[in-house]
Length: 252
Length: 135
Image 1 (spheres, rainbow over the protein chains, first blue to last red):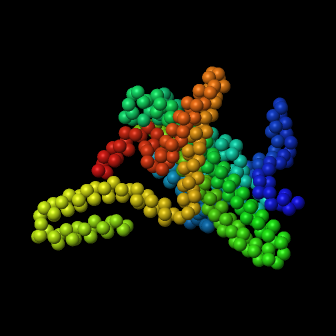
Image 2: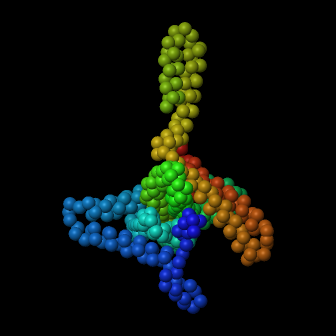
Image 3: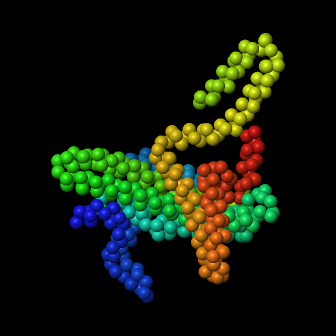
């Protein structure tokens, strides 16, 4: 019973809410899917409701929406230039999805969608797929110039190109691992320290007095996790912008 | 900051000794120029270091996670590609060995690239031009 309470991994379990099976594939509606839907609904409802009045002098919530818009807009313009603005809906959706999913995960008993690598890898694969498809559409085979650095001796070129290709393929992996690892590690740490509070306070008066320390730590970690939630959404969006820049202008 | 004060200090004592010995003064001039040149090459690194320190331990933790994930991703992808080639071509274990090493190279490249030491994709030429401008 006590071990079950303090199990830090338990929060990442996926439960089937509505079992669905089509053609031998398990397409069940899980708690992860539920929170993805919740993320989309919360993000969309927030943006829709706060901008529906569209007053010239924005209210508090409207200015939050406008700040989010300008933040992502400036980020994209800085990284990929004005041509990159055609990707604005894509980057903005990604940023809002990751941000809202991270923030929702901070609520007790809520499931953190981004703590599963398959979700973050799906997002990263979407980014890199867009980069590759758009790069070949716009530049044709000229996109391959991305893998050929200037000023490399000819006899080293095959080796360098191979390494550049592996480096390019590793981008979605590192992008997804970074987001996933941050969320996973943060939530496990939080759970472990909260677990200390529970198990220490079961030891009587001395334990209750001692449990103040992990409690303070848990509070501090919650603040840190809030920062990490923002920071990781930002990092994800910035890197997306940088990769899109490669698709727009390969081999400057 | 501390070594920024040092060249100024030596400069002042040099001016004081100017009347005594001109040979020593030439020597000092040369040494000052060398020092200035070496300081100029070091300045960007030091500024970056200062920014990191200012941002605090959270940013340092983020940086560490970023760099390690870059490196691990390179190695993992290299090993994965090698493994797939072995599966398809039946060249086991050579594909895995060669591509693990290449993946190691790609991981190091990723880390250096995200640390800003090496040029971005397809921009090797440009960054060199920038460095020339700085000199």
